[in-house]
Image 1: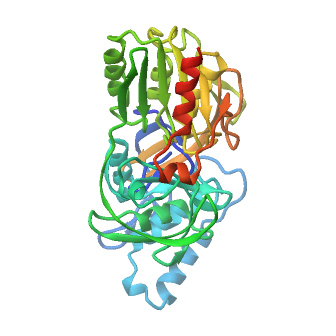
Image 2 (image 1 turned 180 degrees about the horizontal axis):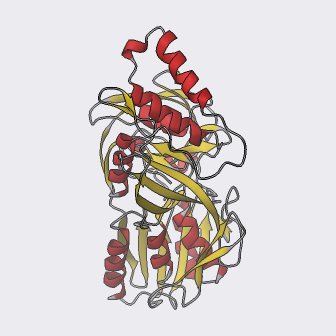
Image 3 (image 1 turned 120 degrees about the vertical axis):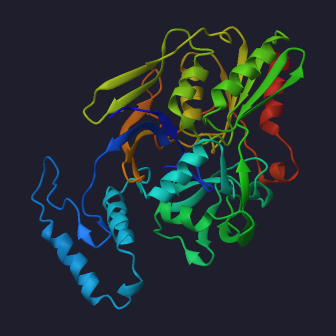
Amino acid sequence: MSIVKKILIAILAGFFVLGVFSAGLLYGAKNGILINNLVRVGTGKVLNKDITPKQYLQDVSFSLYWDLWDTIQKRYYDFKNVKEVDMFYGSLAGMVAALNDPYSVFLSPQVNEEFTDELSGKFEGIGAEIGIRKDQLTIIAPLPDTPAFRAGLKIGDKILAIDGIDTQGMALDKAVSLIRGEKGTKVKLTIATASDNEIKDVEIVRDTINIISVTWEQKDNQTAYIKISYFNEDTFERFRQAVAEALKNNPKNIILDLRGNPGGFLDTAVKIASYWVDNQPVVLEKLYDGSITTFPAVGKPVLKDKKTYILINGGSASASEIVAGALQDYNLATIVGEQSFGKGSVQDLINFVDGSAVKLTVAKWLTPKSNAIDQVGITPDVVVEMTSDDYDENRDPQLDKVLELIKEN
């Protein structure tokens, strides 16, 4: 078994973007694990039923599992329309759901394939990160220039229903499957707005979502502005190119905008933070047994001597919080905006031979000074709120505040 990728899948929800990302710290994809058990194929034979876990912490009788299977098969009224493979995958999903961890989720082969597409930066959906917060399905971050963004969805909006189906108690992966869909189709979300708790229906036409993860511009002769929307497969290369272009003008100030960024690849977060952090830990990982793994900075900190400002808000999660937390701990940046989301758990993505996978919480992450972020978030050095009117009128008081700080310094 080889670790192929380390990802931080973001935010809440273990995060799925609707097209759907997954905002956790997804940390690891292991391939080729042989499950080969329970699945009925072809003539209906049960394969490898005799395979059992290597250890049990408590007595478990799997005869009850098969008793229930047989009872459903013999007595369920509409069993002729049931696919047994769906029963099987549903039972695996239920096993993971029993952990009561919103970031741990079983992915069927189809969902796992869609999830992989999303990490590459292209998928079909509405373009919003969602998650479970205080037991309520919540918009974490609508991505720029997507159907969700154009429909007016805001960070913190609660999704009460999807096409009339109540979301109370709904599993995240179920919500994702209901919201996701082909380009051109519609989905109706019943929303309680974050600003005033107004209840309203929002109909959104799904589309192909292409994520340009990094953009930049020269604000003036002394200031370069870089926005990272997601830490996906192409983010570091785009960031590297953006910095190389920006440095041609020898700016004194760097603005790094991580607002609405739900996370992505862990190694990308570490490499980007390393543009400021010099030969020190970027993030710490605490395992279940209390042991600590350190992820150190890599490469040369070419931006270390630049006056840096980082913008965050409630949609900044996971990898975004790792970068902001590291630079804040080392006093390498001034953090401006609103409290970040607080996604501080680490998920391991384990792929199975049939194409399914499990995204499993295996650790918590801490800032270099051992500050916990999970359920807490990062507190800005300078707090500036964005109101609904600011969004509607296309005002940006947070960025304005950074530009004001730059003039003062």
